[in-house]
Amino acid sequence: MDRTAQLTSRATKRPTAYDPPPTGDSPHVRAARVLEDNWTGSSTVPSRSLYPHQWSWDSAFIAIGLRHLSPLRAQTELETLLAAQWGDGRIPHIVFNPSVPLDAYFPSPDFWRSSTAGRAAGAPRTVQTSGIVQPPVHALAAWLVHCADPGLSRARGFLARLYPRLAAWHRYLLHRRDLGGGGLASVVHPWEQGMDNSPCWDAPLSRIVPAPARSFRRADLDHGAPEDRPTDLDYGRYVRLATDYRDRGYADGGGEFAVEDPAFNALLIASEHALARIARELGATGTARHGRAERLTAALVRRLWDPASGMFLCRDLRGGVIPERSVSGLVPLVLPGLPRDLVTALTRTLRGPHFGLGSSTRLVPSYDLLGEAFDPHRYWRGPAWFNVNWLLESGLRTHGEPDAADALREAVLDIADASGFAEYVDPRTGEPCGALGFGWTAALALDLLHTRPGDGVSPTGIDTFDEMSDENARGGDRG
Image (cartoon, rainbow, N blue to C red; front, side):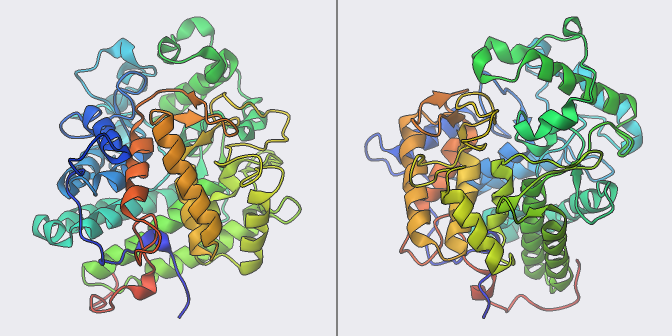
């Protein structure tokens, strides 16, 4: 039987823990305390100071950790986010909390004007959101949350209610965002890919005339060191792109920025596999979705694999392949259907001089250690991020690299706790950067703490498709 995605199914051998153990001030308790402190009653903010609203892919990762503390709260996290979905299927990257002052974060709701500028795209009337998206981790998170307590999930109709929304989200990405015509989704703003300030965006952003500095105020600099954050020039270009997209009524196509990114598409593929599992749980076969995931994997390899660098690269739809080595090009390691020779090349690149895993670094940096733009502290231009390392840890284990996965798991847990659950860290020293008490850092540390090697499940709490029971495969395919 073929070994398939650890990231899309979960064995039920371990009992669910609903609360942290009440003994001492352990890493478990400290991580749980971060999530409790960041909880608003219906969702979890990434950071009380720097990011005081609900962020899309943050909430997906946070739900994955929350399922070990309270499956109900994890379900609520995703339900709150999806309640703000637009009519065209997009899940916005920010859902704004109306009780937070407008000047606490920029761009604020009055910049995005979602209910008016997004009317044609079906933006909700009762909640304010941004108009761009973030990586599609949501179906994966929904499946893992369901597996934490299937009885509760079924009793609440959790998957039955989320499945149509998740399917619409994927349709939006697969149809409206296939701007290159090659089968992959494109991002139309650096913020959509999640690795906001990556050097991969330098070339496509150079075409963008920045918005005047006087036209916006950067609230992020009130809470973060300027040397850790994007430059004013880059920020001006981000604002210009967002303004132009808003003024087009959030219509896709025709913008100055369109990039096919390997991590964004790899997470779409992983979530497509997860949607297949959800379809099976709901009584369908899921075969159409598995087939779609396989076709997307083939398109990813065809369009973005670069044999010379031994990794995937971004493709600028206007300027061609972007020759920058970003950690985004390693994230497809999570995919079970990747050809073996590509897996070998990716693991070699991961350990080689450009990323240094196991030699010069314990955590994988976000950008090429040897690149001219490398900066160990500046946002996504070199620091190590915990969500990416969580994905790579699972990818290593999926593809038969348990020793490397064990070392990476240990590093994530040690450095997350020692850094105060920092937003990101210097990849060589572990020095904390950005916000402390960061939501997904605490959540993913909890996930690794709950799913230990040797327990019969993967460290991310997930097992293989094929080891799941086939008893739910009945009826027609809803894919």
